[in-house]
Image (cartoon, rainbow, N blue to C red):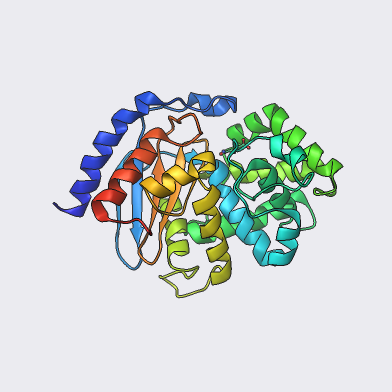
Length: 307
Ligand code: GLN
């Protein structure tokens, strides 16, 4: 069967799974999304892209942005300073959990993919103001995605900023423990803004393709990310990218990936391709139900697992 037809067929089967999940509603603006949308774009290194389903749906990066804030902060500060503030281990807890923050090594978040870790990372992006930090991150995302018009969805940003009591409490706890320095509201502004960057599957697939190509843009030959930082990002995606379902995802799909509560998933097939998926209905762990199903089917059909 032709590759495009395979994707179409698997997508139709996976879309039915949306009924098992629910759209995130703790950010009120996200509750307005249509649950049974499902779209995918695949960018293969040096080849044409392929898309299917609702691939033109616009969605906010949410936690997918944590991969890129981490990479930019690593490029700005180097590994030693980053890992002085944030750990390298999975938590096994929800992405916005605070339980281990107090129990173990007070205040140091376990990893940069949970909210506490990502808020610390946002504070470590170079820049003299929150605005400058965010603009640098946006420019980085635009370059990786190959689209200089990418912007934030202000409705989603304002909706999250107005309701984020839990993230606020995490951030103030981090400040109390001197892991976060300076003005908490400034760091949260950068964090909420990068979560609200609006994209399509094609943008996410292109960003994933750059990671699959060890940080080099295959079109220009330019190194956009040092290989070492791509390596670190891929490890975090395998161990913590799908939150506390990362082990299950590694067994079922076997690829470095990162999901967000808008229902987006970025997946990397090292040396081959980048994949962007959107499916707003989420499972209990906060991952797209239909999106995970689609990646699982695709990985089995094309033998994509790294392991
Ligand atoms: N902006 C969201 C939050 O902080 C991102 C979480 C996610 O995508 N899992 O809650």
